[in-house]
Every structure is written in structure tokens, then in C-alpha cells.
Figure 1: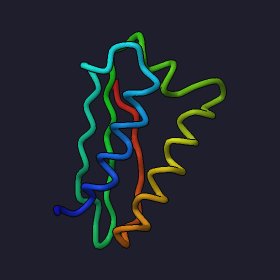
Figure 2: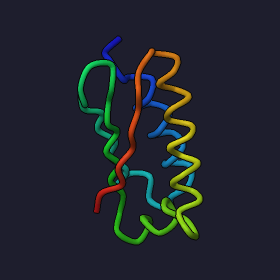
Figure 3: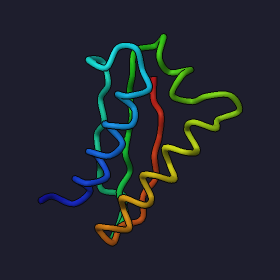
Figure 4: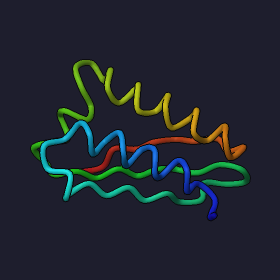
Length: 83
């Protein structure tokens, strides 16, 4: 299992459940230093608002879940939402 694989799977699952067009969801987990990863999330333009949520609440929840998944792997996790 590669570093950040659990994080990537969890983030992908959560985001795919939120958006209308799950086929356009891309989650790339990249190394972000020692024991740290960055999950980069891309969705269809029309779905990004759903992923961010009002006042960023959904995005904050996704980051919290991603950090919990990172704890399973002993990693610090950051999540970026890219368009």
C-alpha cells in the first residue's frame, strides 16, 4: 500500500457521494514532506460549489475526515480543492 492510499480512497469516496457527476472526480495524493501528504481534489466546475459548501463547511468536514484517515497511516494531511 502506497503512502496516502487510505487518504485518497476516503476523500474520493466522500467527494463522489456529494457531487452530481462522480465520473469527473479526480483525487491525487502527493508527497508533501516527511510524513505528510496533500490530497488535490478536482471536480466538474458545476460540482465544486457543492464540495466547498456554504461558508466552506463541507470542505472543512472533508478535511477533518481526511485527517482522520491520515492518522491511520501516521500522516499529516492537507486537502486542496482545485478547479
